[in-house]
Length: 357
Image (cartoon, rainbow, N blue to C red; front, side):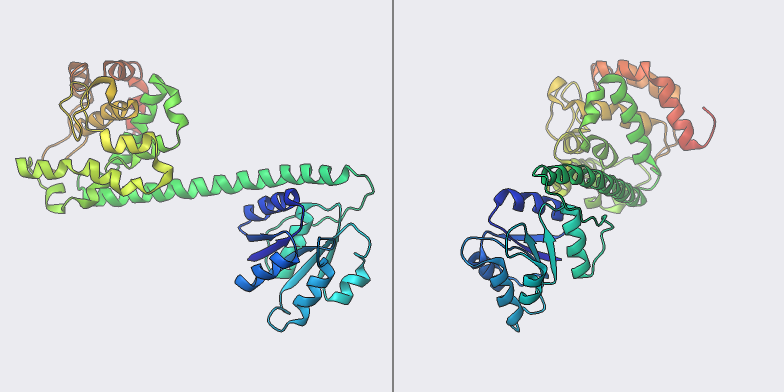
């Protein structure tokens, strides 16, 4: 829905624009009738919300122009009034579709707009009238709380849908990489447990857990003959496989949500503590902490899972390998976190395997 808001009070326009945009209404603004005419000519709105008392031509005059012009007579007009002349009779005379008296509830106005536009957002319709000069502020405060509650609910739904979409993408990637069924979900769970044990602040960045899940997104650019090869890769194939970290960063770089630790995990999860990793040869604390955490989780799952070229190893062997590589391949602090959280990590694996811990 397109809405044109015409009022010389910039503060009121800002408040109403914020309310309407939360409900996905496209809002244009004008401070007087002249600016409103230009806005209508540029893009005809579905509804015009129009203050009666404005500098220059009044809202009543502008409404009459809209309603007598065949090009705009179908545009719904809501008049806002708190002044003399803004009566129901005057509104009817100029052809307005609705009249809302000040002070008004922003959600009350939204209810009127949605009725005229034939849409439904499920907001409560209220039409309180009061001579208390503080009433408008009280209505704004009450509606702001209600709108925040609605926005939080919408944000939760969006985040849930986003999480499900990312998980579906990770599963689609695994269909290319035969032998790593549920790898992304398992290694994400391992990494989350390690992060909580080592530094819970890592998880304050929402991109981190998605980086854990989509760490191998760059494999969409690796040929299946390499991903599914049932024996070790040749040097040339290994060089090509290693490009998946940079490819993954390029794929996700255009998604603002991933900027932060999530993107760093995707690029740097194959770096080594001793500097012998890729793609940048980073060493020690130059490697992003989230990537150092993930490297331990990734290796844990790699050793304990079947791969196209070998059978899964034992959990105890994976733990021994991690400890042996502490200070070489892995950050010693992360390995220590692994030792301390090993019982919880085993429980994660049992949940995925469908057996009691």
